[in-house]
Length: 435
Image (cartoon, rainbow, N blue to C red; front, side):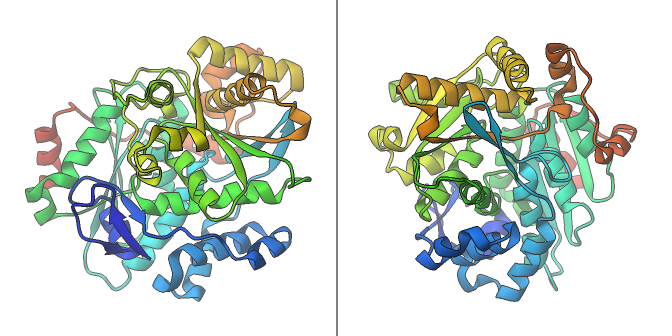
């Protein structure tokens, strides 16, 4: 598997280098030279595959001979011991991606990536320092995906007071090789510190740095799996297929575009934004204007400068009309998000997290705007997190208590361990150098 930088100023690399370094030196993002359609044989047997069998075939197709098939199969089997069921909710289907250990879709990417990195670091004396900026669920998924992986230390940066209490507990109570830093700023400040660290010559001469955000290609490869798994679960695969994707840093939607390139018959991808609407404004005006993120109920999407926009532009040759042919975009404020949670619960007795609500609203608006009959399409909304992680938001809306899964109870009672830091790169760099 050969990869290039979206800025085309850095040398091409193989998968191992792309995964372990995270970012090219030119501050672009790594992209595969080839994302070819899966063979017809795969589609013919799709209904017979388990999730892990399907994931193995897709991973092998993308990665090629970079990893022996026995090792790749082991990575897949260890990463996925949970399901992603497709549930009918009103006129649409909801793909529940929160049945992993941290109750968020990012378990699919982080668990695969942690084991992939572990494979690449075997018999390697280098210690890799993973830097992660999180606006919510990435931190917990990465922390659990990399916990006690030999040769890896993880530093998670998150904005103070801007993640839910349960999300925070999930990555600040583990200790071991996981360090949490509470930045007095926004998610964009956290992401900026990580990017500056990757570009700092002195830091990179002393430390081996990598990333586990969706800027790392190892996160996107496994996230493409569940789009195809959703298609596998459909009763009528001949109907037009639409995915509504709650979108912040746009890694999830980009992974869906990878799946489409591999032959998934997607008619349209719907980017569902909250009030951090830079992509929606780009879609409407053709101008991409990053701005400071604002805090919303759907905090994992609070991104004012989405990194994966660069990958989307690269895939569509920086051409707005090419993007519009494949993707549409909508945005919703907190009041609309809350109303969506309440209405779906009242109408269908189905409970959504704020992110899923944004996705459901976008699917509904898309269908109405395009005068589609929901009975004659496959409309799939990606549900990205368990509603219990946002109990303080959801419970007052439904006027009921959400049951806390057993795997969360021990985390909630754990002691928070974090370092408070200003959003100054000099301060962060000094801490890393002395770590």
